[in-house]
Length: 390
Image 1: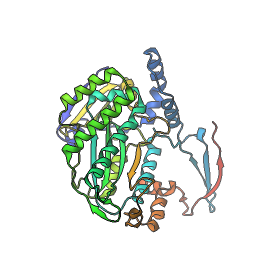
Image 2: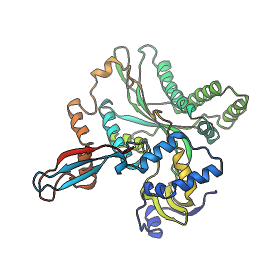
Image 3: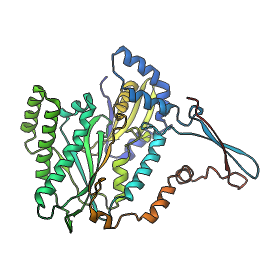
Image 4: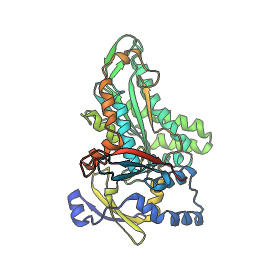
């Protein structure tokens, strides 16, 4: 099945005027309608569906249904009841993923120090992408390559004081068109802690980072694969990318650090697709749009629903695989000076921020409606839980 670009627009306004949205499509509804047919199609084509995919899709399908149980609340005044179905807490559920994202953002805000952070992106050529699709254990090597690139540069540049940086790595396996595209986002503090001093670091030698990242990643892959075939691929990378792999590090890209965290975490625990981009689903085809990275144009694409499903499920990470990792003084073995540094969010405020992510407060923030506020004006009280059926 080939991609079918329907139209390309210079602005989102032109796109929406040409393709007005008549209905809001939910991914859960699409999977409920087509998942069984897709599994039959995959079996006929001898396509392997990973066990974690079957598990996560099923969890998403039964999210907020009786299968997972529910809680009952009662108004103490008029005795009206409210049934609140339990969520799946899966990694492929839009609803649960949004809550997880807010919780993780709050966690990071309480961890990072109150200094500017630079957003770096480490990319590799597409000729390497399929290696990680065929063997997902290799994805950990991308973390190793990026962290070794940064830590070794700091070690070589600041030997006397042994300065250590602090950074957070977030792995993405998708591009804006939701195809397989392995790259790493990095949020790094512009401070480094040495033996007894701290230092402002706001300069990164991109030429060095590109070449060092290329060398480290290719060597790690060669050691892991131990295949003569990779040697020719490695040589091709050096020949075609003699300036190294792509590293982007725009200064002050996110003046508000919270926006930067939200940006890189937006699809860490939910499908890498925003439902508002769906234009139509009809006759087993889905039409949607995305903003192309290279020229920022808005592309409308129409593909078979099975290809759409295949694109999404390939990004479901393996069970227990961490797509967010901490390094330097943000790691579990943090630096003594880190504990003395001022945090972006003080510990006394962190509990309040966490309370905003409770079920009730999230409903109020999202829909501007308190789910436990009865029509009579009283607040409903918890009555009892009904356990899950499975």
